[in-house]
Amino acid sequence: MIEITFLGSGGGRFITITQFRSTGGFHIRASRNLYVDPGPGALIRSWRYKLDPRKLDAIFVSHRHVDHCNDLEVMIEAMTGGALKKRGMLIASRSVVHGDESHTPAVSGYYLDVLESVHIPEPGSRIKLGEEEMVITPSRHSDPTTIGFRMKTRYGDVSYIPDTAYFDELLKWHEGSRVLIAAVTRPRDMGIPYHLSTDDAVVMLRKMTRRPEVLVINHIGMKMHFANPYKEALYIKNLTGVKTYVAKEGFRVMMGKDGISVRTLRPARFV
Ligand SMILES: [Zn+2]
Image (tube, rainbow, N blue to C red; front, side, top):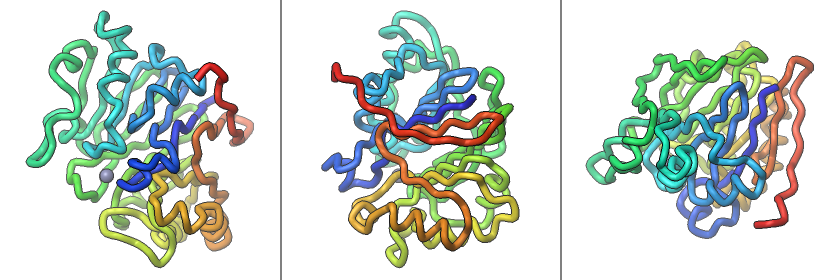
């Protein structure tokens, strides 16, 4: 059984600073524990949903924007037991590890030193993670080093399309995944550069010959939030036939040999 738990569903500058939707990224429990895009709140939300960050084996960061990498260092702190043991893997864009013209690195040398391995993979690279394998996928975003992935598991594939403009090549990388998680930031008719809108999601799914069983829309921006993402999800489903869910804090997707099911977890009382 593969378990994907969302610690937030927000994205973009205005949702991030207001926390109208939380921005903690998501967690995948397979043969190993992987945290994806630890935005602001990742540490707190992990505890709120009883996902012990000390049990992480790897962290993936798609790019160096604050809604994706803010909590990276503190999550490494947890994964390495307070930076006391050399442990865990970081898989991240070049901008996260090295910075770029306008950003410092999102992780200091102190934390890089306590990791067992650091990967800055190019699209097409394959990284083994326990029984699973991640294939790194491309993106076209304002951070040009942004990466996504397709995780191959014994129950089928899980794809993550982070912030990106739509481009046809996405089809070849993600077609045939069972679960597709995509940053669909904008509602229909309100697209902006470097991000997917509901219209882009429809175009992409329609062009796929092997569509996912489930699409989860994530990285909800302010315009999407107020347009009602549930209406947008229904619109996608009606036009493509793909069961479409909206991520939210505590939302869990379970993929096993018998099928895919979802539930929403209650937060733990102690936080
Ligand atoms: Zn971004």
